[in-house]
Length: 380
Image (cartoon, rainbow, N blue to C red; front, side):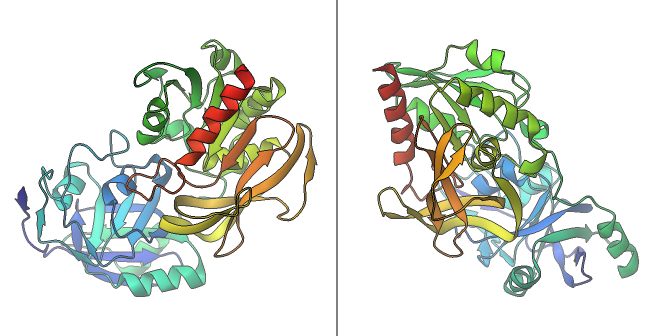
């Protein structure tokens, strides 16, 4: 299916970083103004999954790939019920989108959901600036009559920073829902929604798991009311240093020795639950091409990431924790950031990336099988 767009926008737009750097372009999507943390994604495909990932709440995403929107927007690939990014920055948007599943253009989707974006920006220069200076607050302003540069910069600097932001409850489900097992039901898992993507419970359902997705504010009583064989902590936005509630919940699960698996934000929660600290990365890991080594096998995987914080744990030693011995199980080969943790004395592990990996790659899908193996061993 081919979807025509209205052509390149003539409406002027300005991107203003908190350090005073300014990029000029044209409006893309909705016209207006928006604010957030400027981050960049290195993925060359999967922009629908990026836009609808709740972990991008309050972030303005810069696409490093210059050409975006060529396959349009379909109704099958979103990871949640809405676009979560605060703003979108592209260099060369597709004038015509073409794909047999396309229902509308990306420009139309952004406009319909009120997402302010900017096109015609030198995203290579912007990405290099963010790599050198770090992720920072940003504003996008578009319209026929824009404020002066000083006014725009002042507005950007008034916005809250991502460090210290407590955002999981803003993106999580408010009511528990169930994703049934596909085929024969083998296990029940309580999944704590800190910003879960739709593909994640689907990957578990494919393995015969009935997934009960619980709000971020769930209590230990809520978790064990579903009689889980395992507990899962999802990805999500914000600073893990603020997530005292999920940390306390995970500690309660660890005390009961229930098989546990966490991804992304869930990895940071496990780090805190074990007594490790967390810290903000300079510009984070985002995209679908990040090399990670699984130290338990020696295998190197190409993985999907979206995180701006990391766990501060020793890479080359076993640590004593209140829940037994723990070690770093995965590490990023680009910068040695901790990408996974595992307990050696009970069935609990986590990774910092997205093993469900829509729109790819699928190197890390085995981690769901590892979770199944833990539940099988506990049942036996």
